[in-house]
Image (tube, rainbow, N blue to C red; front, side):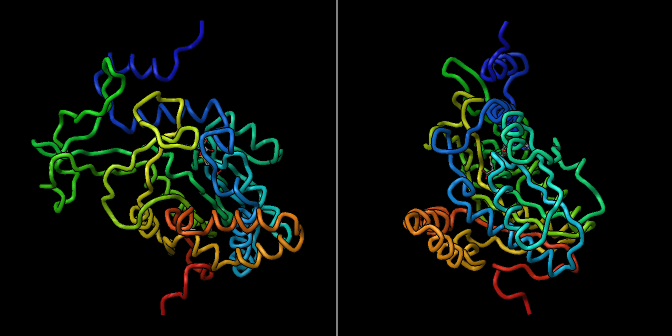
Length: 352
Ligand code: SAH
């Protein structure tokens, strides 16, 4: 007997218990989606920065290695959250080795399919289901690229009767969002209490908890984290829940488990999580500005000198990673740095 699809399981669950929170729908759908496939690359659903060019992972590796060198070169661990195919980790650790840093490699990854892809590149890495089993006592050099956007969010919707959690129901037309029955006005900031009916507010409790965990470990163990994602720096962005399928936006409520569900990352919440745990928080700055500040221009020139026939392709990759019309502004970069560790490159002058 074949096991029921994610879609069937969710429909049955909703028939049994009634509408479920968006966070639960998103967690189940993404769990099934990532467990079964490699969604990255031209043949998949989306392309990420490390898959565009080796320069992305190399520059991240050198950025971390620079901090590590200035901090005194203690033995450290490279940790990546949601490493995908392992491309970023391969480029980053190769660049680190070139400057004398050979960290133990730890991956936090829930997808069996992607763990298998990572193991092809990293026979000796250690895999973790979550952050709780990461090593203690050593500085962490941590990377999370397009990880936080895949974590489940909650949504709240203003109805004529006040704020309600946005839930997912199932009917003849498939899965549809509906307001829940329980008033949740107490969860909404005062200034939004009387927002127009239909207004939507998001929160990312799992992302915030993971950001706190990352920051707490770095504050205690030393090290730094670099978080890159599409998102916003202010507050209250409205509805950013979306599906990406075959490189196009799709209905996030249709066909759960077959498409990537994401939400924009609230960097102000990640900043607060970092500050609450005692790390120094830098950014967010645009991915384009950050990559230019840490030397993508010089790296582009060096690679092009090495392979003149590929010069155009290398310049096109730089454009895609940095230009405001491409990934340069929508994608943002935020860093956590341990107390006592040096100022990181790429975020402008340190405060006076
Ligand atoms: N960082 C990679 C892949 C981004 S896709 C890149 O830039 O190419 C999101 C990654 O996060 C995948 O590896 C996915 O399996 C993983 N992931 C999603 N939710 C997760 C969770 N709750 N815990 C651990 N990994 C998760």
